[in-house]
Amino acid sequence: MKNNKLNIKLKPLFYLFFLLISSFFVIINCNIQNIKHKTLASFVSIGQINDWLRLPKYLNDGRINGELLFLAAVNRLYVLDLNNLTIAHEAVTGPVLDSPFCNSELTSCIGSRDTIVETDNWSKLLLPLSDKNDKNINSTKRINGILVCGSVRQGECQLRNFPTLERIREHRSLSGNWQHVPVVANSPLASTAAILVGDRLFVASGISSEIPTDSPYREAFPAITTRLLSDGLQTVHSGSLDGEAAVHIRVEYRRHMQLRYLYAFRDQHFIYWLAVQPRNANTGAALITRLIRVCLEDDRYTSYSELELQCRSAEDNTLFAVARAGTFHSNKRELWAIFTDYEGQRSAICAFTLNKIRMTFWYNIDRCRGGTDTIGLAYIGRDAKCTNRSHLPLSEDTCLIGVGGPIEASAPALAHFPGRILNALDVADVDGHLLVIVGTEVGEVIQMKVIGERATRRLQTYADYRVAADPIDRITIIGEKQRFLISAGKEVIN
Image (tube, rainbow, N blue to C red; front, side):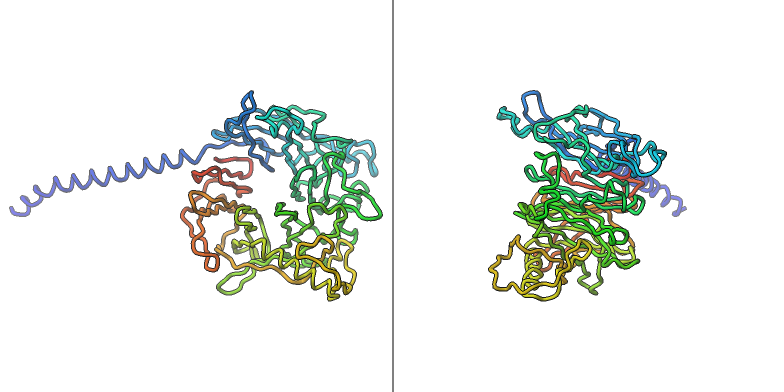
């Protein structure tokens, strides 16, 4: 009898507890639904996304009113509203008739013309152009054109109006006979990394085993060069006996020394490229990461230098040798990069200060100036013995000597990720914090912040979740609200 009375008294409590638990799960579920809704503004292109540009959205009077996303995919160009990723304009760039065995105009070919077939066009370079002669004070740097260079027709470029994407034949910032000049890699798998500074286009283009390396149409094509927009995209001093603003991979090295150029950036009067290459020309040689440097105004590339970058675990000194992506944080003057180990099983993030990098370049230059070792760049034809020129007064920022010295620049890993491969990253100052965001090869996003002082810095993860089915190819932080933009396969997510 007492038990029955007790059960009667407890039943309302059980009902109340049940209602509270149910309400709790409803609230949690609603919050998750809201979070998912906020992070799934997306756009799916017809072809795989190759590159993007965030560009201003102009009013008729030249004032800026928001942002547009210029998106380059295989065979397509898009202009999207950055807020909701809706299409404003679209253009078709391929497939086009093409052959790697023919010149860019298809007027001359090696062997049969049967090799000319419908070929997909992979975008390799997007270059925003502004009208330098515009007198309107509100639009002196208004972007009204895009130079788009793709993998077809030997890597030539075309002009597009911005934002309508209509094809145009001329632009005030571009002159000369540029229309059929090869500029970028002519293979879907080969890399291109470039940066425009004033009138100078600094561009590095890789090669791929799927394209013949002995083609006469690519034989004189430089691996790295400075091109002038005012001279039809030609290399500075092209073909000059006194030297040109270019380096070429020697024919005997091209099959085995296939470089992958990941990123280009400028710091003060230097241009840098982050690249991955075999340690030597031997078959199966281990991959290493190199930082390439030339002086901004060097028209002969006498300053061309390379050094190895090493990202190492602070715990056991494990070497993460192969870079996969990089970004330059200009405020702190640091190169941030993600690396994997030789086996491709683990990833790490390292940050290299430009002061340390510049001093390491100087150590190698000064070593060669003293007559020690060789220049060390045999694959581009520069491997002469260093001669003693220690009597020459040179500053640490000299542009008179370039080497590929043996002294490397190393940095401790700020975070490492066992069993995970990182593909893309961005770094930004947000609300007084230095935030780092990365994307993985299985579509995950990891958000971190830097904690500690320089000597004890590390990365602390505050979010880790999956947003896409494909590998994340690029990622960028937008504004000051920790929003981000990613591309994964054919999809863009905001």
